[in-house]
Length: 302
Picture 1 (cartoon, rainbow, N blue to C red):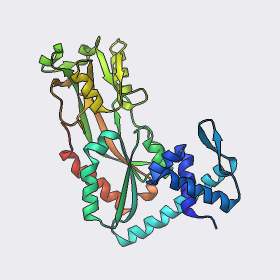
Picture 2 (picture 1 turned 60 degrees about the vertical axis):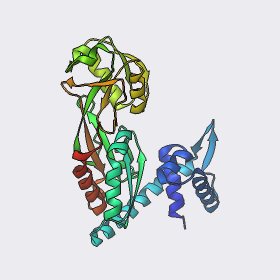
Picture 3 (picture 1 turned 180 degrees about the vertical axis):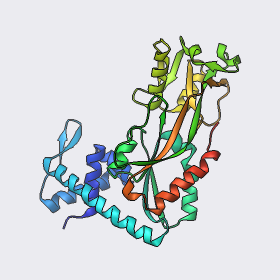
Picture 4 (picture 1 turned 30 degrees about the vertical axis):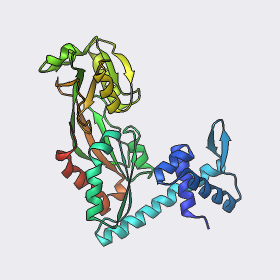
């Protein structure tokens, strides 16, 4: 009989594309994932992974097993959901995916409350790009996602995903202390042209919003520094290298030499909780969504 844990490891490699990424998603070491797959290869007498350049690729047999694992994991989830629903208390493992600033500014207090109130619930969290969250939820890689979108870049809503609004997160323009904008009470979007920008890399929701907004004003933005971490962006602003548009959630204290200037209309990103309809009956899902919404007004902002 095929071992479900080994199938889960193979499925994670298929979804995430590498042993190391699968290990992060499942909370194991890469060595443990490799051992599980090696045992599965011996169990099935089949080669499952093969070298492809510097990485690995699934064989046809492995892809078939990964697809089968997807079906089995869905069946197991339905059974676990029914049992948890009958108990009426959040329990079991709950895998949560969250983008970086939510993981820093919102999730710590939420996870702490869940751990205190529900000792039978084993929460796990991984950092996930919001663009990828809906697909990861759909495929059962994570149970619940905290994602966001902007007004001109809506979050995809694929079949098989339900959502609830957590809250709205305003953004401000951050400028060096000696910048001409530093003395302004408010900025308009037309003011943002001809500036050197510090922003997230291409492919991120924040990057897309900034580019589309400035292009809509008839100007091609000068994206001088493209870095993912907002703390790095703040350091670059403090060094006088440019200006940045930074959401308040998880921003933390603003360094000396950096001035926060409101922008009107205020850019707002909306946060959502995402989950599969089949898991909606889980007390763990409903309780986590409730606590996310309850903690939102007290989130870590500036």
